[in-house]
Image 1: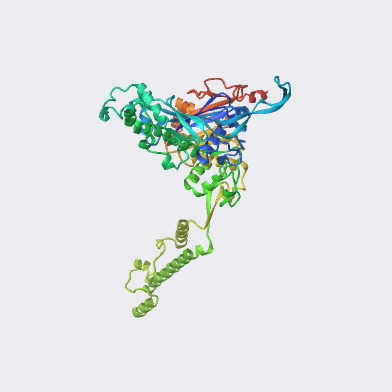
Image 2: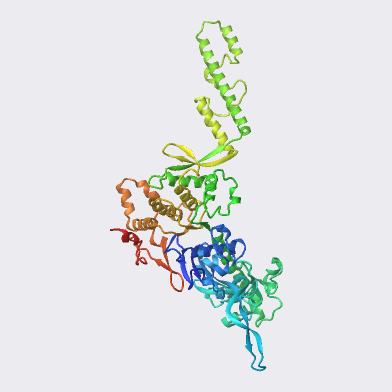
Length: 631
């Protein structure tokens, strides 16, 4: 679980800043202060970790063409090519996976991955004339200009894994595409104890009973000298044999007996006894870090500030729209294909006390004529049979009351294919041997037949479907292209909140083009998606300018901590609402204010109290503009 990122020398940020990521994190600040820089760093990391390893990307794939980073020269702080970008992510170990998952969970609370990436640079030189003091002749010589230009693509220069804040593994780039392991802290108590288990206790090796930490450290350094890691992606997944980085994976990622073969060691017995466990620890930690970073970034969802609306018939339109996801157009396809998401969105669109735009979503299905031929034929056959049975039953009842001789009555019934000895109730059976297509004999035939027909058609799914909006005031069906801008803007926000499971959802300006009340109600949407027991448990990172959104979140904190909501529900006699109550505590919400400074943007975390207020003053006053414009 991603709990924070740190960012330095990236776009607006100079000195490294910490950005906590809680269930709901809101980013405020003036325009061009650096709020988007936080989000752009995640888009860059996603490209490098998940897509193609490119740290020089202009338009990250996840953002379409709505974000243009310009490449390393443009996103490094103040275009300083000689500086490195610093990016760090912190994770809780409680949900980690991999070979060392249980080891990490039992011994550490947090795992941090710290990266520095940059480019190689060369100083340009200018040819100038000067007098040679020896010959007295004028000559042209290259003079350094103090201007640097890049050489090659950006790459990871340093990589470090920290457990509970203490550096455990460090890697550095010594040549293009290769990371050398320069640090492995064998003096860490947990790691030290784990390594010693390979040659003490039940695995005791004669002569190694009194190995000192210095000896173990020396053996670790010598083993590290035989290892390297490929730097072809943001975070390396495992190590291999040094000098064989260009070989195929199965050759490069050699087992311990091959990896450590052929080198001279100060204590060969110690190396032989501990090398398997040592390699397991190194690879296990790299794998855990790789899984944590790639898992968080691969599952990340980004919704940009400008939402797009797909055409009326948007089947396969995503192939033509680079902003299909970042612009939110994909949300309409999700709602069409996912009934659970459609149901949840409708609950918010028409729920009492929730969003009330006046529309709900309905799925319209279309059938080709050939698809309807069989079900309509079956329906007609069943209706014909039902009519015949009713006529037979009525005829027998009338004949029973007539004065016709019994022989003539029986002959007439035989002509109608009715058993003269049958009771009236049994006439519902089919003497023609036909099978009814629906259990509707005792019911109104037209209504039941329609219901049966609809069930059969519904089971087929139809030849084509489309999503429509139903105006709740007059039940008019309209397209998503026929409603106001507010609906088209808030709809992708709702789908982003309720689609998927336990992912990082990054949204820029969810409040755009919507009424202040809806802005406030979005706070409850994020609360349900992040904190409800049966919700998707997303984590939200939201850039916003909405005063109404933050006030709703502060109100929910106050109600939770004071019991105000509990008292209100009891007063209104709606005890059932208590089951749907979602507790929101100060630690669930993080409010960040990005302030521009001379050295670079500064991130200020504004702590929230149990009273639903801020523990410190809002920089510059909390939305003080309103008071400046009032008389």
